Length: 395
Ligand SMILES: [Zn+2]
Image 1: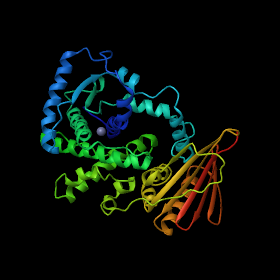
Image 2: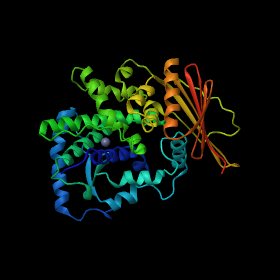
Image 3: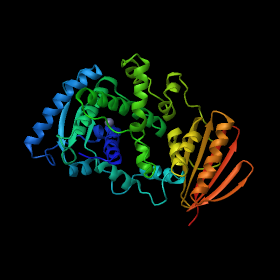
Image 4: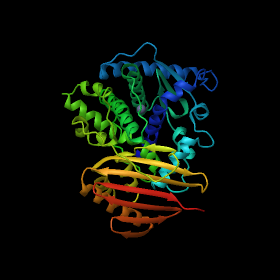
């Protein structure tokens, strides 16, 4: 089967999305798995289950961990997936807040819909795990395609992780992406070793799909996770010791994943304070991280420049406000850099990036004001800190 790297990337990313919802699936579905929607094709079902058993033995050998008896396989179809795992027709409050943050930080254009993004995402995955259960989507899954075997090896690793390590997901975007990179990187590393052992061609190297920033954001664990795991594996003399240990001391930021030496040196994110002049409480507070900043820049400037400017991230804190009276949205975002030079480099690159997409720019000393679409964005720089405020203009 011929897949373009992009198509391949999307298929693999969907698996991440579902892995991310593991807890939701487990807690909200008490009797979810009725026979409704299941494959009627017993032969396909049996064939898949036989393949899974075969792959299981290899994964046990590679990962040095035995499968628990409670692991099982369920075959589902696309309709079932959208019904059970698709986004709601209207965004929940939390989804809407995230959508506003992505817009006000200019990651996505003003017409971006998080519901559509999530639906696109959910529609095309081929396998997923929740707890001890491996789900396989029959329409997207061709047992004769070797990449399907790779996907099974990947997913089976998630069952081992769930059983032996109980990974926990932090509440910040940056922290969550970092833990997911550990989880997905481990699964990809196992899957690639499985391919080596069985003569299946390795997956193509994934790049950052900058033309689809929402997908690019979700795909962080696939793009950077495996390199992180490979680093730890090598550092432990080609053993799983450091990888296994990482589950009780997971990477704390996308920075640590992208620069694994910082993880081993324990270079943790700095604590950032945000002082704002608002009378209400923020509706959302988050830490976005180096990768998020890289993406914002990479979608508007040369990738190499974006990578360079995002480096030197020390920590950040973002707060989203909504004014009930004026219906205005507003973010404050403090990013603290390792050095004043790093802060300056980011400040200049961001100003240039905004100019590149047609923003009207006015600059004074230490301050840039940009207007674009329906937003007014102010960037100020002071020593090692840059502060971004971004608000929707009154209609
Ligand atoms: Zn996965």
